[in-house]
Image 1 (cartoon, rainbow over the protein chains, first blue to last red):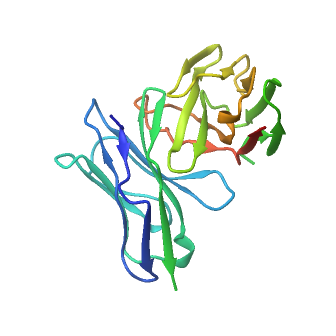
Image 2: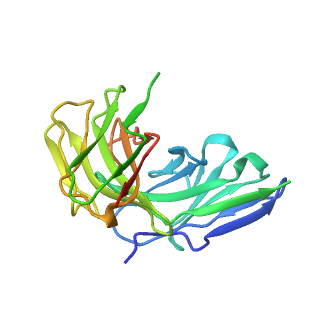
Length: 111
Length: 117
């Protein structure tokens, strides 16, 4: 079974509106969860991580993510999207050296 | 500047011709790993290394080899490339790996676009 799932291939949002990118994970041990972003023709950049502790994690560029154990989800959020947030977003799960990434969600923010 | 350097950036080769993609980091990171990115599949881990002389398989290791003789370098070797290895490859490193502590942020290289004809 896939360890990390991103159910949406693409998310379209107007600039200034809230942005949510969904991620669910399979239940197996402690979830070390991450979000990364990939801008065109570039490598991935770290946004934020959940290890243990607070269920709301704050990260780079105004992004945050909410960890929900009962729903096994780790959705990425931003209160007000910018055109510059248009990129490919990956949810990932790490476990003692092994990393598994979701298929990615393309975010398109229109002016 | 702290960075992960991959070379070459682009590579076109033919089936069966051995090739090496180099990866070097200047951050004294313990952990290094290789991924391939394919449309609709996201990134899939090929191999990883937790320290010098310690390597292990990721989810898609078939057809690849790695070595970690020095802390800073982690080359990816394709002994006999095949067309299904055409992909975008990324190397990444971090100070620690998930579960080890608090410094698990991965730093990625710029990628190597490989085409095997």
